Length: 190
Image 1: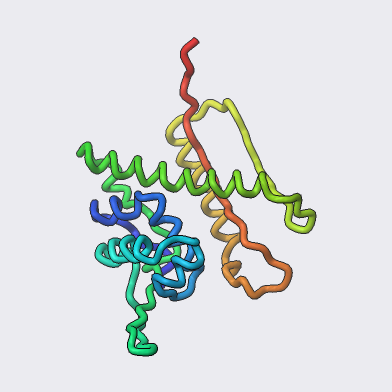
Image 2: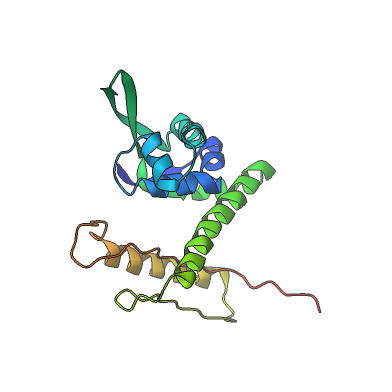
């Protein structure tokens, strides 16, 4: 599994822009699994998960890594092609409407998953050993260059800090969702 896969193909971007497929990718947790195992983990029908896995496999977002025959049934084990997926900046410069719509849908899907994690954490019982942490800064005025600089700095700090922290077998750890959003404020009509 690669650390990063840069998505340059519109079909890959469309495939990953579906919120349910992002949930499927996250369910692998850095280890190979069958469609049945993922379906059980998500509490979803096997056929539904299998359909989306085949879509991700077709565009090389997932890889088939092993096939085992068990009681006459072929079990196929898949793994995401990378830990992180990034859309190529050159695609962002395109003016094609369908590309822009796919990128917007991918962004919305990612945000929906972050929101879902946020609301689940808020509704969960208070965990004093692993508290929820949130930083929120509002109403700052930045140029596009400043936004890029801030994003690059946050990304660098987060990548450096999180290096080597994918091991779920370390002592006293809990799985976290870590996000950074820099979004423009939209004026509301009065």
